[in-house]
Length: 598
Ligand SMILES: *[C@@H]1O[C@H](CO)[C@@H](O)[C@H](O)[C@H]1NC(C)=O
Ligand SMILES: *[C@@H]1O[C@H](CO)[C@@H](O)[C@H](O)[C@H]1NC(C)=O
Image 1 (cartoon, rainbow, N blue to C red):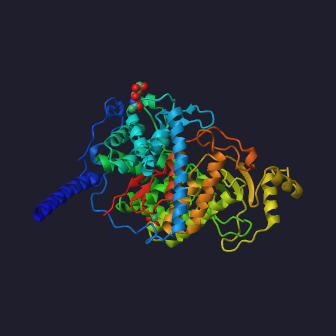
Image 2: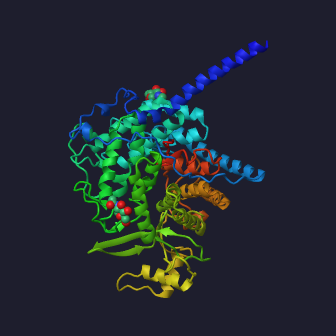
Image 3: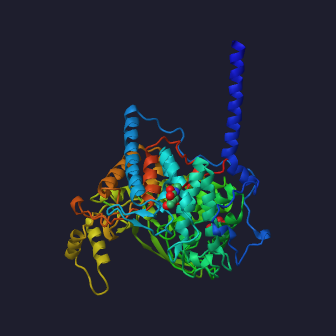
């Protein structure tokens, strides 16, 4: 009996070992593929025209950039370790909150499924649909990894099945955004593949990858960013644009590199690397040396002429991908670390400022710098603007600071994140507006609230040329525009269901374990969910300066609400090892990609 049992046990053990081995080698395939390029090339799905696309400007194989094949480095730990323990009450609260986020997600998902299935977006008030992203089911693709992370396997499987009915061969749009297609669709497929290992997702990622690659078929191999896809499919010749947004030119690294890692085909990595090389060459020769301007000339390959420099809208994810690329490839591409470090020391010196706020909170914001350099002299002026979009910079600096072991960056990232939390709390609905202005402090070290100075700043901003505003009129303007103390103007009062603030709160929480961040996150979630909720789902808001009764819904729900905002809220209330920052990097659409680890 005994020996039989034991033999059976060892048989189980053997079967277990074989299973584990097969399973592990299966999960490890991406890494193997990286080390031995060309070992794993899934067939292109039938009906995808892009794999047959003939380029006008092919890359000779001899000049193809290839991923390094040396073993990855062991990079510094990013998440706090050990993570602070929680009491039974804290645990209970956390799980209730997490369930609430999941309930909100499921409500939106079900409405999308019944009213707008395979369309890009659901209209959350009227129940209609919208197709601004090619009409390839943006919400469905953006939600795949969130479904997986939330453990919604039946919904995930149904969504993956439905991908068979999405074809990237054509679009009804005259022009598609190559940037949005890359971060939402390619990022979405790759992350869902990394999490589930489902080969159908890899096939879909390749299909989108082949399509996007055709946008790079220009004489200088810089991509067309607003792209006539149907024209390209017919073989039309194309050139890169002369006025291109930095983010739209420079946000391919993570997705294209991961696609090369999992397929073993280097052409995508090569395409992204050519852009990086071109931008790297001019990093110290721009109007604000160390940073790149918002607008660049991708046709003439002139990247330093324009004067406006920001970490915010239209530039953001180029900066975001610098440390994340370094992390993705296990530190094997040190140029990204160097570019990150140089860019951030410039941004910290010029773009970050402390706003004057009631209560004198020690917070930071990242503004826009206009710069002009001549004869080695750089003259700058700061626009003290806050943006919801630039809130990602808190997480960027904290993550980058951990990666290169620079505590200064982590501290700055923490204060930017606290600034975003402040802006949420300062508004009547508890939700930050899209853009606003504040009064910059003269010193970052000390800054006392001065109400008169604030009204004067409103006065100056409200005056134009000869038309000067009086102090009294400025006070009336404050009432009329419903400006909370500290805000001097709110040019864009909307809230688009954006993720950047909770993104940074999440990253900072995983890095520091600060418990107050979890409370802030919960306040943010409750404010957003309650004010944006419709019969069907959640809707963007027209104006966050009003009180509850006057809220107007704009009847839009971008795919990032399910793909990013609710994912970050969910992860905020999860165990810290669910999608650990030590194993994954998030693309700019919150799609987690597996890092190369030693
Ligand atoms: C694809 O579309 C066809 C026709 O509309 C439909 O019958 C089929 O169920 C769809 N398949 C999936 C997986 O959604
Ligand atoms: C730019 O200047 C910094 C020093 O300020 C230097 O470390 C970096 O290597 C330079 N970058 C390039 C591409 O020359």
